[in-house]
Image 1 (spheres, one colour):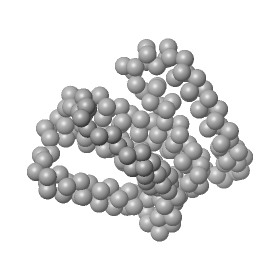
Image 2: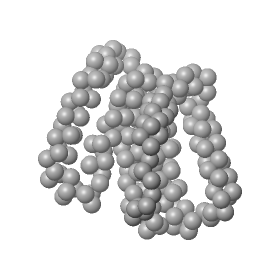
Image 3: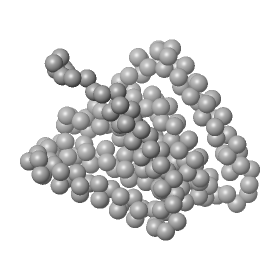
Length: 192
């Protein structure tokens, strides 16, 4: 529970934080596409996440924090495989053949996967008019944004890799949602 005597965050700091997230996250797909021109996709992903993991481990060690229980480490490993290797790995691999704008738009299908895979919340989510309306409007909005590009991929012969990229990307998005849900429900070390 938040401390009632704590000072609220400055609106400018909140705007700055959101701006940083939007710029960094929004440019990720573009920079991945630039990088896969020079580096093999999985080497790129491995380098990226090994660097991030090393920095986080160093930060944790500097603060004197442990690495958690064996169950927490196991949960983190499964979550990491689903989020980073399968989810982000699919993005990095697919961007060899698909434009970064299409990849970014296809990633927006993740709310569908979250609702479909979040079995403990089915009763609540599938009875909620706002959730159903959001999924329907989101589905049509995503279709409006990328229907032309997807139609272009399906209309040309010899686009096997583009079709494979679309399929891998959808599987990766489902894995991202699944990993996020495992993290949500198992973060405190409950068995997977």
